[in-house]
Amino acid sequence: MAASQNDEKSDLFNWVTEVWKKVLFQPDDEIAVNTFQKYFAKDIVIKINHDHVPREAYYGYITSTRAAYDLTLIYGKEVKVWESPNGGGSLVYDGALNYTDKKTGEEQTGHVIMVLDIRKDDNGEMRIVQTTEVVTRSEGSVKAFEG
Image 1 (tube, rainbow, N blue to C red):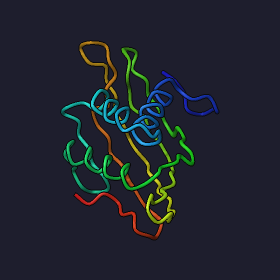
Image 2: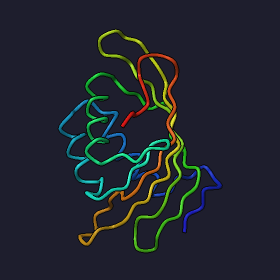
Image 3: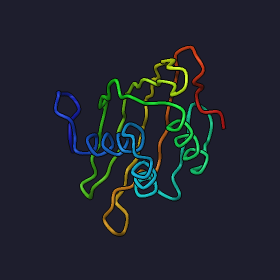
Image 4: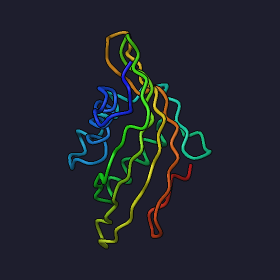
């Protein structure tokens, strides 16, 4: 079991960070789509603020956000982690990002605390099987997910 008390990041945190970088922060839409399809379980349970969000609605929100904004990771922190001896585990992730509107150049910041559950599937691939997110945005045109 990995500890979260020092500056060293767990393997699980590094894996989640890499998945999110590919889904949100790099410019190639094909990489983003393929990463989402590969690492977000088909039966994933998603909650954003107090709403249950179906996987396809979450996917649509991600793709529409990518289309409208350039996204930059400001920071990502590992708050707490439990790593399963069989791979996967649970992670509390604290992150902030910058949204820049591709048309107007307007900038905003977003903040998220996520509690993620990750499991290895029958093929040994890690998958995000559940995420609960508390999301806020600075003032402006970017809105939190509205299902």
